[in-house]
Structure formats: structure tokens, C-alpha cells
Length: 248
Image 1 (tube, rainbow, N blue to C red):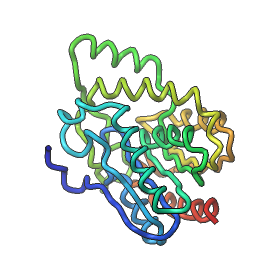
Image 2: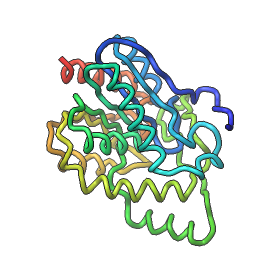
Image 3: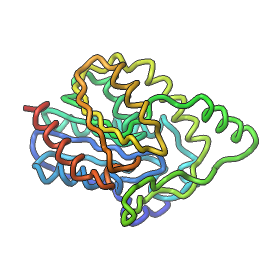
Image 4: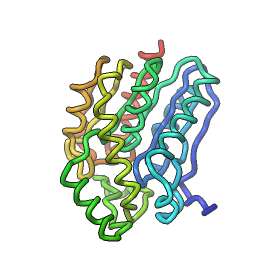
């Protein structure tokens, strides 16, 4: 197996009866979610933050994976966490937010979900563009990672985007999008108005579609990877308050 990049390691912490599952984004790593995972651990919660298959090593590794692998890993992590805790909240950034929504459509027992700049509505033009590139024999393109306003922060992510795996995410997001009405768990939805990766309108679509209560927070000082950007403290504070409320 390819060596895990320094900083991309998964994180797990045995804490109290409340479990928090933390999911990173497409081509990203747990590094982008570490402040939130550590905040949950610091509050005494049990935490699992897996490194999703194909991530945190090399683009070549990721080319062998797709949504089926990432969703299976998220499901397995949730199952393991739920087995040793009483209540579980799932939090995800970007594709991690898509996975969070997918889990919530299947697990109405979740105490709550936290979505940060979630991807739930693929742009048809982008889907056609990527499909055309794959049909033309391309398997990767330059990445749009590190969308962070804070110049002193660098996201640990691939500098290339593997295209066939990206197509599987688009397909899954469309399928999940059709099932958003099944989500009944309370949701904390945090959105950056200046996001250069996922349109902020994805959050509007999500908020309008779910059946459970939604609390929205605007991340005005941050770009897409808001969890390590200027609003990281706001995200951690708001998320901790939300977890406290929905698991009380």
C-alpha cells in the first residue's frame, strides 16, 4: 500500500456516549477536518475521522476508487461508532457533506448532521465536460484544491483531480439529491458565500429539500475549505453547541 502523506492520517478518539463521525472531501484528507474532530474530542465526545479510500496517498491510488468505496467506508465507520456510543452526529465538508446526507437518508436514527459547503447538485455542464474528457482518454486534470482565503493555510489535497472517480461522485450526488426528503435528522448547514468549488446554491437546494429542522450559518470570511480557514473557530463553536443540543 502507498504510504499515507504526513498530516493525512485518520483520527479516532474514545470518549463519552456521544459519537461524532467526521468526513473529509473529494481529493482532500482528514487534515482539513482535524480542527473540528479535535474540538469534538476536547469536548469529551467519541470521534471517528476515517481516511477515505484512495485519498491521502496518490492520485494513482484514487483512480482505483469511486463513490461505492467511499460510501462503504463511511457506512462502516458509522456502524463501528454507533456500536460503542448511544447517539451519533455526522459532520462532513464538501463531498463529506454529500456522504453525510447519504448516510442520513439511510439512518433516520442519527441525532443530527452537520454539512459544511456540501455538494448535492452537480452542474450538468460540468458533468458533460468531465464525461467528455474521460471518453477522450483523459483520467486526470489540474485540481481546484486549496480554496482557502487565509494565505497562511494550505490544504493537504491532491494537485490533480482524478476524473473517473469524479464522475462516480456526480452520479451519486444526483441519486442522493432525489432522496433528500428522507432526511429527518436536525441539520446544521454552514455555507461560504464565496466558494469557488461548490456553488453556495447547493446549500439552498439541500435546506429546501430535507424534512427535518435546519439551522443555517454563513461563513462570510472563508472560501470552500472553511474548516481550516478564517471561520474555523466559528465552525467548531457552532458545531459543539449543535451536538450538545441534539444529543441532550
